[in-house]
Image (cartoon, rainbow, N blue to C red):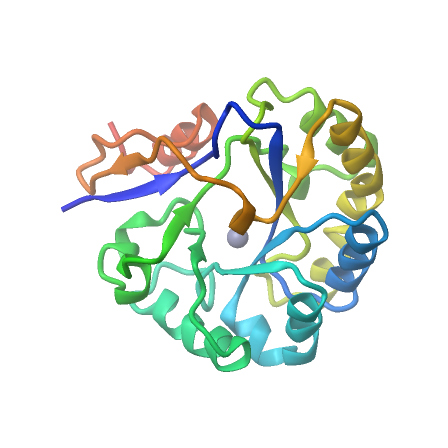
Length: 235
Ligand SMILES: [Zn+2]
């Protein structure tokens, strides 16, 4: 048993994709949309089902603004059925299935038991550029961690966060602030390097990584591998 996931698109095209995890999160996701729209850039939002249920209008504003939405589980926990439950919440508003899924905490194991994750048209997508924005409070640090990231290249998928899975409202509103402050400079910097910023539906994903539950699969990055090691899950 195995599954495939992607961390980048074609390297011979100057396209990069900005992705935002853990929303919708009004008004933070709206602030992100405003920045993207003002620069004519599309993003991809990996939303949590529990926040879609709580803030359906914020979710619909993302969709109406022309951005891509993907499934990032219902409760951000390793529960069997969490991706399927999220798909009900998302699909009921979207009117069609999602095409992209991002596992949380590299929890590919529950994907193996999810009909939604294994659907033929579904692509499981991680990222090759992880600036760890959620752990930074200085906008400048997030800009540098993105634009100077060693993996940044044509086809890169950049992982940012416009929310958090935490039920702590104050934390959820505060955490994305530095990223939002950094976002205009990130977009300008990427465009200055010649990149076109696109939604995941405009990027041809290539070189899938095979993941097996015995831990012999390859992981997205050294960062990921360290996290798995710390959790005691892999070789
Ligand atoms: Zn997440």
